[in-house]
Image 1: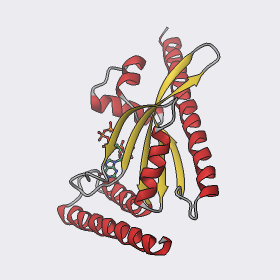
Image 2: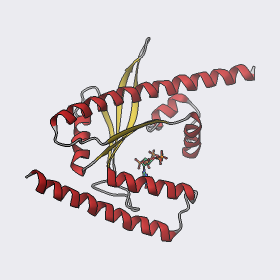
Image 3: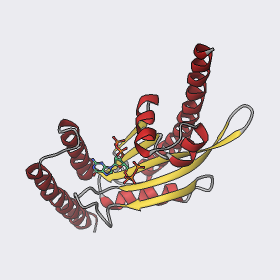
Image 4: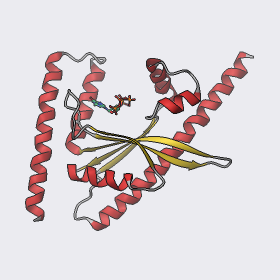
Length: 206
Ligand code: 0O2
């Protein structure tokens, strides 16, 4: 009956999302290892902060509807890559690339996509380095390859992005021109801040 079908669907969805949680756990462990090793080797910590998030069934459903993805787990697996997400915040821009290179070198990770919005910022001023990596997860009866989205950014970029995100949320995506223009100007200021910090660091470490 309908109730049994619905229960089965929910169960399959839970199992599906659990695999992404495992993928996120695997990548978190990797980043945790890098962080400890970097902390032991460097005079400062290249990783300031790490945050993970798993998309809820509700926001995943919203995304597949908005994207016109068929309500089928295989289609979702093939088309949505940010179900598991990890955000790494670093003090300096150089740290972003240091950490990203260390991740990209790992042999059991397959890099599916790199978007460098630091080299090439979005028109609104958004800057971050986005990687999508695929990690193998060893289940009891099979191995699954799970995509995980990694966003790397400096503390200044993160400050800007979180403020811009709440602004968009507050205005329901329709941010008045005066505010969005101001945000783009502030993005420029955060870029200058990152540059000045890097310059000061060069002086301090030379
Ligand atoms: P949320 O609420 O953070 O999850 P995608 O949706 O990932 O398939 P796209 O646009 O090609 O499509 O991906 P992209 O450009 O790599 O951006 C994905 C994520 O980057 C976003 O996820 C945001 O987290 C972040 N991002 C991208 N552009 C901006 C921006 O202009 N401002 C801010 N604050 N964050 C941005 P979601 O799912 O859109 O949002």
